[in-house]
Structure formats: structure tokens, C-alpha cells
Image 1: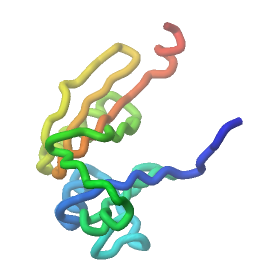
Image 2 (image 1 turned 90 degrees about the vertical axis):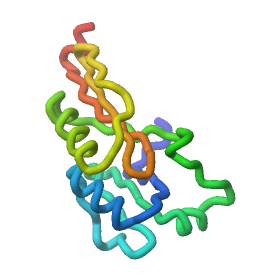
Image 3 (image 1 turned 180 degrees about the horizontal axis):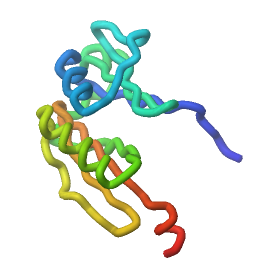
Length: 138
């Protein structure tokens, strides 16, 4: 068996850490205060899934490359699962109400449903629900 990581940390640059925390709190996420300071915060996405929101200047200390302007280009789409179609809709509606922007229209393939939004820095987030029982019947 190949590499099996026990946790995943996605690092995203943000322009204003406080505004990003406010936005993602409204979406429904929580933060680990143990890994939060004026430069960064650890957003808890799942039991072993975390998004580190890093102020752009601090993010720059981890790379020699320019930071992409997520409002103009896309390097990554953060896709996370939801427990139901209704939960997908609820999370995207919360993101839009909190100041996020629409990305793509909802897509319903019967066994799989997804919808996406852009956060306040332009990063793309995709929420998806998959009915594994229906998928296995195909």
C-alpha cells in the first residue's frame, strides 16, 4: 500500500484574517485556537482535515513563488463532502449570505449532487453529496 497520510492540511492565503474567520464562521466552520494567531488560523473541516488560513505576507514565507490572485485564476478547488443534498444547499447558501460569490450552478447526477462557491478571497469551494448505494447500483 502506498502513502497513507493521517491528516490533511490545505494552506490558503487570505487578505484579511479576521474577515476570513468571520466569513467561514458564518458558513459553519470552527477554528482551533491553539493554532491561531495574527498570521494564521486553523479551520477544522473534519476530524483529520484542516484548512490553514494564512495572511498573504505570512504565506509568502513558505514559498518562493508569487501568490496567485484567486479572483483571477484558479490553482485549486477545495472539495468537501456533505451528508445530504440539503446540507450542500445549506452550506452554499450560508457562504453566499456571508459575502461569498456563486461559482457554478448546482449539478445533480442523481447519485451525486454538488454546488460551489467562491470565498471572500476568490478561492473555490465545492460541496458534494454522493449516495453511495445509488452509485454502486450503476
